[in-house]
Length: 249
Image 1: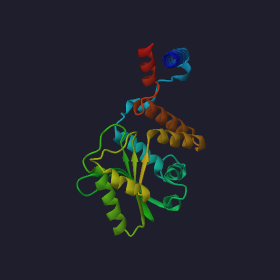
Image 2 (image 1 turned 45 degrees about the vertical axis):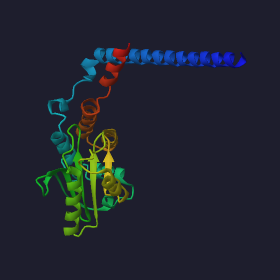
Image 3 (image 1 turned 135 degrees about the vertical axis):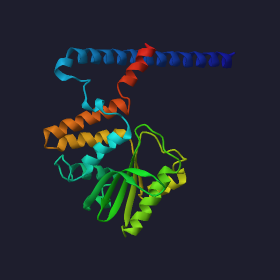
């Protein structure tokens, strides 16, 4: 009888704990929903002064070509932004604080760099001592052997130019498809510091860091707008959570 009583007590205790957790989750969901609704109301009240929903990036698209052109212009030390290497060096520091390219002269930054096998690297940077290829994937999936072919082309091009260093950067919120590059090859490239994966949350951090350091107001506004565009159209922030809690309320 003692064992049965003990088991009943334990079962009752577990049931009470589960109910308490569910109550806490429900209370948290309702609180978050109220906060989100309050935020929406505040945005409506001050929309004429702040225009929080307006962004000139909305007249573009979330496709990778438009975003890649923006990245290219920011990474170019001779770009119209006039901030010289500010954005480039900030970007390179994210690959590694002692990365070779941070002290190297950047000779070329272009989009749609053609390779062999009828492929094009989204953004290509050529330094006096190495090469960087950037694959920008906000939406589309990788093609078959795409990243494998990019890595092979960068390696061959570096050898031909007698460059010691090269790196492939993959900007995406998801891991590469195994059909694009197998996991074993990707991990080996990471160990060799030839492959770096960057989520769009880190891109936003890079843009915000640049906005805090740039001296030009027009560029600062551009960076802020671009960060907001990526949050909404690539990361799906804010509205995604509003919909989740609205459905559970």
